[in-house]
Length: 229
Image (cartoon, rainbow, N blue to C red; front, top):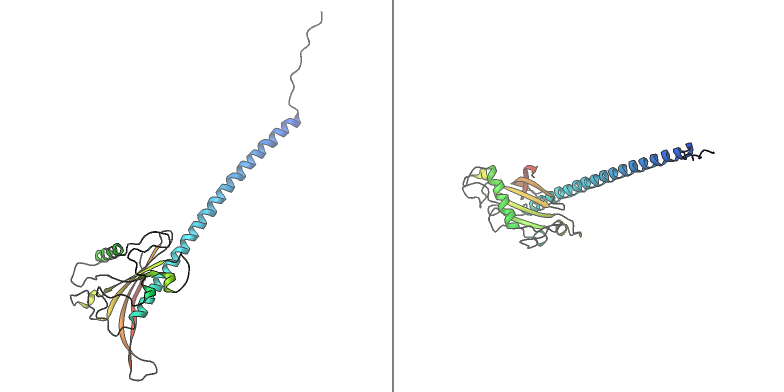
């Protein structure tokens, strides 16, 4: 009697085993490349955001400086500074005052100028003791930077300038200047909620007019200049 035959199970050849290893390695390489690609995309995105924030911050700083320079240029033309800190003291230039009480910044946000003035006052009061000569800040000028320089572009920062009397004149009236020294605070509001500020103390001086012997003219001397927030 013949014994039943036994069919042998197929075994993996060396060729099939190599193909499986190659497939596994390929999958691992693909996964690694995908991970590196995602990490690179994250790094590029982060660097772009950082660069964008830096550019916006620098634009705001330059716009605030331009606001200060523009204000000084106008103040320099005044024959006296006695009424400069008064509530009615504002820029005479239409391109430095857009007439808006609640303008929109370049990022679309609404700027409440009355509330910003209250905030400026509170920040100033926090640094100085209560006294009759403590500065009272007055809104002097406000306009988009593009309007100031007659340039187009919706992303230009919005510039706001405040003035206040120097507290060291000790005249007891923050609405009147008696020592020819005033304070200027300018802020620029940009995209990405960017906000840069410049604080300046200026002094009025009499100087000889160039080319006109014996003729005096008003000039402005910057006593202090520093970046705020």
